[in-house]
Amino acid sequence: MITPVETVRTFYSAIAAGDTSKMIELMTPDIEWISVVDFNVQEKGPAEVMKKVFAPLMQEWESFSPAPSEFLVDGSTVVSLGRFACVHRATHKRADLPYAHVWDVREGKIWRHRQYLDTMALEEARRA
Figure 1: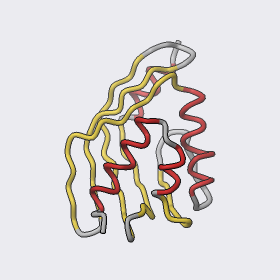
Figure 2: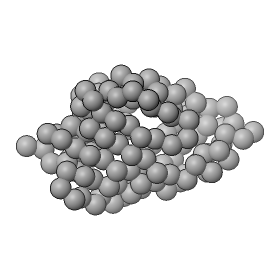
Figure 3: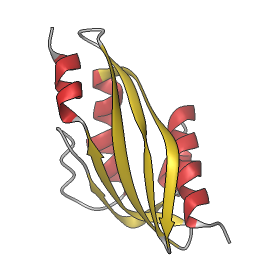
């Protein structure tokens, strides 16, 4: 059985590789994605996460890559701390900001994700 932290690490690897199929495979059908900034996910499910989070990310940002540096595990909950580097497509400005992600895993799949990051750094990169 895959551990919760292995599930989360695999998800980050899928993001880095642009492997959306793998990302979807690692989400439960009823995943809840709680995000910041403009990514308002109202419905549950992988299709909603891809439509409301990852599609807009790919459209607005030339590149984006979360880089976890620390994992804290408590049962089936994994907190990852790291940095998020991105380049805005319109302004070409780079942002590099700290984040904390809280992942809840059930039977090798992510059923909830909560994101905390420096939204001011993102807004500064968006300004021309």
